Length: 548
Image (cartoon, rainbow, N blue to C red; front, side):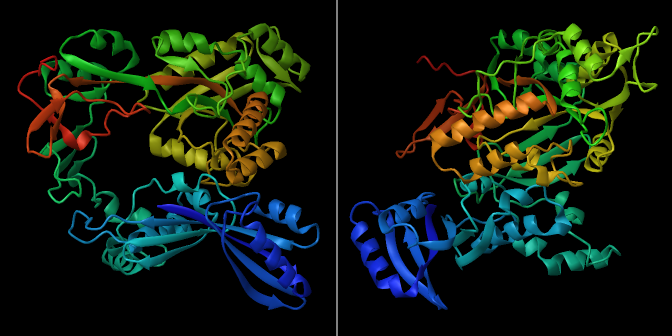
């Protein structure tokens, strides 16, 4: 890939020769990033000038004004960052069709199609156009500065030949559905996916297993495993028993199992802080959650350290805000709200809630009552439900709890039909909080379902999106972190530690240029990704002696 920028500004027609001459002279020193200057079109007394830059420069117009003088460079200014992707030749989908630039453009169009209700729309809203230059080259033009741009393209690419409108229309008719409203969400592709990775989809039996087979034409060479099976085993004890019995080779360990399995010499373990966090979110469209003092009181009444110690068995850390804790964007100087139920009660009393003889808080004759929900099948969230309920009861808040099927929970939060919810976010390294916390993202099926709105936070979110200087981005992130921590739209509980265990006989098989086979230990990347070389894994009949 390569990144550069096309920038546009206007100048007075009568001054254009002098301006172009000054810019050309300045290219030798102050404006060395300018690769080419093009006069585009005359509009009355003004002329539009296009600059092609070697890289994205957010300060290009400030530099021009300082060199040419105020009034020489006329608005509107336009930044059009551009990414060129050069695709690897020879890659094919599992059905044998070639992977091309058309598939990349189609994936962008599918995300932006409102019929597909994609949660990624805001990631790609800054895109002006995706152009297919040739079968192996994609040009992405942005409307404005957008610093997370490159990271947003780390996504799976959809096969255009299987999901274009003609194919969807054909499937809709065959199933007796309306072709106009039929979307990728309705497609049978979701149960029979086709990609171009090292394993191809074979079979999926709901709530039991998914079977993948080796893809012999994978661009990096066929993986070592002939078959990979994902089994669904809801009960953690059954998972552990099957792991000990050797009927499964690899699984993610529950917190209470970590220390025991790590000590077993037959296994290898990998662990680290997850890129995400668990929280309690409050629906701020409803009273009293629209009051920041109430939200802070609710947070202070919960002992998050107790949850980490007894529910996570120490496999977690406190968190105070929405950025990945392992990055510089997270402000470690911000301390968690201290567990202080007495202070929490005082805040509630100051907000007009009084405790009656029966122990419950009331205001205007109404008991402080709400329902806390989460998904079933998650023992940790179930435990948080119980602890939060008991903690709030101690300060006079009557809380009901509900465990819901995942589909029901999603429907409730997407339609804003909830009071408070225990959930978690998985995050990327890029500090882009637009989807989750910007006030424009509070509509049904958008991710700011708690309805958080703060003008200063909005400004910082946009500034972070448009800032390319790392030091400035970090500073803006720390400012945003503090605002969100003060507002408490969530009770930020913890970031969990993950641990995965594997049979020690699973190693990486490498073949050198001379054709010699070498077995090496599985090694995680700098970010802790131990599955990075997954297609090179192989299970030996006995544990190798790496010391030899």
